[in-house]
Image 1: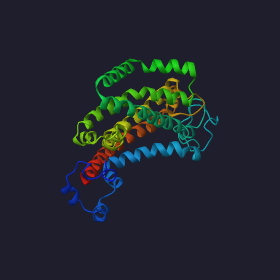
Image 2: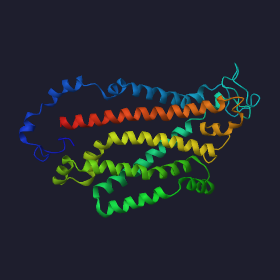
Image 3: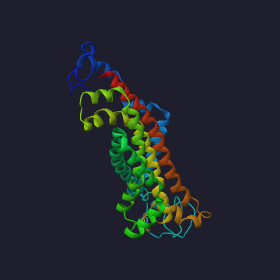
Length: 313
């Protein structure tokens, strides 16, 4: 919480400390010399590997549809043909070009996963912060409700929901978001309980700050680091989850190309053209591993940046 919103004495800092603080103009040269956050992140080899692996999957998913050699649904060759000059990754079980389907099959799996986790965290932030900060019966009821949600067999719920409402994109997003809300809420609650014990939160309460301002000004900024790492892990879990659903035939339906569905469709031709299975599996692995590596580095540097900012205030 910055002192732009509160006077020095109300902010709970001694007047001598306020007087000794450099003026904004004096701070500018020092801050200008500090490396930007993105430069700090890029210095880490782990982050560069993460960015590279993630970009491979993202470029294939979002640029691929514009550069694919054939229509992904066109039957253009014998089924299960190995790679050749005409078909760089061979053909699939129906005689469609594997490369064209690979370059067209990642958009939905990524967008569905990211949107679902974003919605899960929007709900999880409200639930987790309120439960941890209020404590008492609110926290107890919230934890019991989350325990009940964990006990529900998610795959069974997906099967019933898809049977009832179909496997539309909206249905998949809602189901995935609902599945990840308990996990997001529990992580947010744990992080919030740790932050709420700090003196600056107690000082904000003593000043009579409204609950909304304490959430946004004290708790959320200090929770960014651990929540960044967790959200990356949740995105990778969602990617694997939607790929699994597509593999089982509960997600994106044929003939729409999809990386998970390609693995399922082409199992029977793996001996004649293994790339029909290996290529989508490699892109899924590249995406999940890259996001995890980048998320770990981002969490570390964001947490350090928050601590550095807090010491300057």
